[in-house]
Image 1 (cartoon, rainbow, N blue to C red):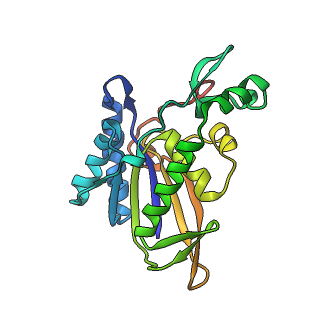
Image 2: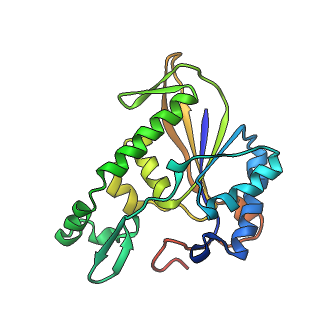
Length: 225
């Protein structure tokens, strides 16, 4: 099984939809996902993710399943005196070990939301035939389906940290998922019984380059050019 974790295309956050550039990104993304032979589509309920997904669903003539747990993380902002208020996954890496930032992270009380993502992730994957057992997944109904999941930057990074057993704060400050990017997770099965998630590509934007589109720096705060 392969899961494609897809960040929504370039967003108009104020109206929870896409910019004109975002619509072009979503069109190019749909062409790419058609070539990937996607079997199932799941999507966040938020407008920017749904608008991105619609291009792929229509091109593949498939109906997406909307899942509430895929929406962007809520209430996850931190105030830093130098940079102001930022989403928790946008805090500068240079500030990660400052006492002020450590205290701010602790005050988020993120455990409940993180545990919810873990629980829903396990339920989601179990329905797909893979049951989590201490970090690896028992192949109850193994298959080679390709699953597209349309979601968000903060959520996607958090889910990746869980799937790949990586420290969450390091993932938040060290990785970025560009708009409309595709992150491919293979449930690598080396034995009949077990599979372990393996990242084949993170934040890939090849479809944008093919379409002559420039990657938009949504979530990159400095010296992107």
